[in-house]
Amino acid sequence: MPPPMGRMMRANQHPEKADFGALKKILIYCKRYLPAIIVAIIFAIGGSYTSIIGPEKISDLMNEIVNGIITGIDMDAIQKICLTLLTIYIIGAFLHYGQQFITATVTQYTSRRLRRDIDTKINRLPLKFFDTTTKGDILSRITNDVDTISMTLSTSAANLISSLTLFVGVIYKMFKTNALLSWITLATTLLGFIAMGVILGVSQKFFNRKQADLGRMNGHIEEIFTNHNIVRAFGAKGKETDKFMDINDRLYDSNWKSQFLSGMMYPIMGFVGNLSYVAIFIIGVHLITEGSSMVTLGTIIAFTIYSRQVSQPLSNFAQSMTQLQQASAASKRVFEILETPEMEDESAKAEYNPSSIKGDVEFKNIKFGYNPDKTIIHNFSASLKAGQKVAIVGPTGAGKTTMVNLLMRFYEVDEGDILIDGISTKSMRREDVHKMFDMILQDTWLFNGTIRENLVYNQEGVTDADLDRVCKAVGLGHFIETLPDGYDTRLDDALNLSEGQKQQFTIARAMIEDAPLLILDEATSSVDTRTELVIQEAMDKLTTGRTSFVIAHRLSTIKNSDVILVMKDGDIIEQGNHKELLAKNGFYADLYNSQFVVA
Image (cartoon, rainbow, N blue to C red; front, side, top):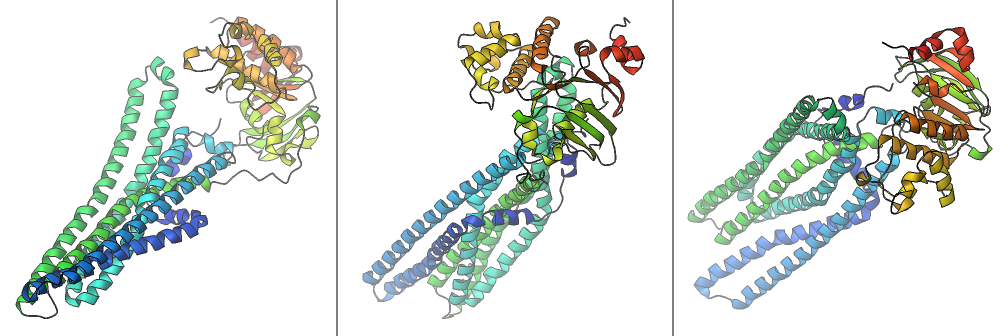
């Protein structure tokens, strides 16, 4: 059996490193869009600049009005200043729109590319990855985590650029206007930055936990809902509900702590901004009453606006940092998939045509373990001729399905070799090895599509006559004739297929593919005895002239096999046909006779 599900998840379940290292990978990932990003930055700088010079013009306007009260208001000057302000803000609005448009475009292209690369990557990952990671966790990374990254790039990244530009520009203008009031504003701002740094250091680990717990939640829900009938049948509702509540409580805890801590940044920055206002008014009014020529009413109003513009990027920083923390945790999980070691690239290997394969198969001193420290196939050797029907039998856990996984190259052997027609499967491409086999498992797989689409899956040139022949052979002919749309009937929950019918469909699909080698792993375990006889007759026709491997616990179904390999604890302990093995009166005979023992 493969290693327990979720082992890899537990290893990465609660990463505690509080940094933004994973975001660097996203930035590198976006480098192909560098020209568009540069344009967006230029637009952001331009938009921020219009916001910076606005208060200066407002200060000029207020000074002009104050002076005009005494000497007479110059309406031409005021009109000129107002037109300048209107022009500045119109240009600023255009630049902000351009920045948001470019950012949104780059973000969606990046998200689409991330999902595409994950999909491509999944097809290159070894089966061990899927044996050690729940489906729900993988889906969570593709959907929730990528969406989190997308949302952050479209909002926080753009806001950070604008906020940084605005902050630097406002500080420059403030010092140019009045150094004393600028230092007062910076002193209060420094308090905000210190608080932000402390909060970020504490809250990042909770964002990491939140994303990991969300993956665990999705994995648990997917697993339980998929097997809901089993849970109800075994009365495990209470136990599974307790598990769900435990995961939900952990998710609540990490989510609450991350949101609470990050949520503190916004009111702190608001307090810092208000504190700056108070300090500016107190010091500014004091300087005016003392008769200082360095400060005017226009200066105080301009500094009030500047202070607001300083607190605005600080608030944006606080909000953006919250989203960046989530994106950092999400990026870490996404790139765990993208950086997982892939199967060996086999594009340089020669292509083998499945139709040219005769079907001789040889296992040479196979040793294998799902984990390096535990070998479960110790020294497996067998030589099988083309066209033989080979049965692999043995108690549960003997290594029968593992041998099939090795034969199909779902896993690589640790030692030894597997040869097909004298050629090592290691020298073949995996996809060519897969094309050589029809594989029928005890677990059925049908997708939401028509009967025709399910039967001819990934095959071309299949006619209705071919479908009729195969469906009649497996006992589906009458069932399909009763359907209103025949082969164009959609397979969904409304059709209410039995497990036996689903298995018949999967067997028919394999018969249509007509590969030179065949694997049957408990293929008739879900059908009744009568249907089994129909399918068994079809299997006899299907296996004629093809090397076939049959795994079955009901030994009565493999009595006509040419060779029976009896496995126990990862080794072949007996080999021969049914009569020969019964005559030996050994382990196989005990297995066979135990079927007829009445307790």
